[in-house]
Length: 200
View 1: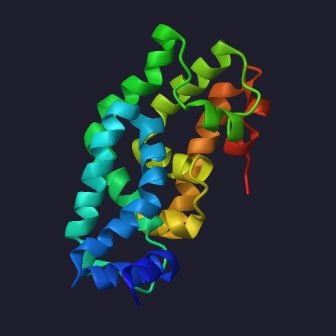
View 2: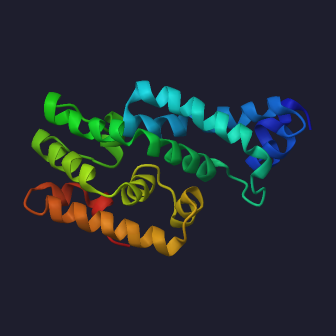
């Protein structure tokens, strides 16, 4: 298989396996998934910090590629897991990111996210309530909620990304949704955030 064929046709597991002998092949994984990982990180810590974290994520993935489970053809959950672990070292920045709208009136999620997950949000006060509620969610619960609601990972993919059982994914998601629902109950926001707050 030529380099061009590998770039187009091969799944991530094949590319990663080939990269053990030909390290330059790993750039295919970067090209495929860096935009997704950057978007996820930028939503959580802002674009500037995300640039560095994307680089760290792929450097870590490259260093650990010999341990990649090639039974999984899609590497994206693995990469989200690495990125989420790195976020653990940047929790203060994430909290600052969610509290920033209180100071300057910005939407921390970006326009594309607002259209897809937080659709029809026009009230600044509602956004502030959500941001404040997210700050209060336990970090592990927040990781699960955002991977599912923002990145559209399945429960199995989140479990794989975070190295936890699917049952733990479900309980963390339930806790996070319950906490957000309670925080938003006294506002008009509950109906707006249906996708985040809805049960299975």
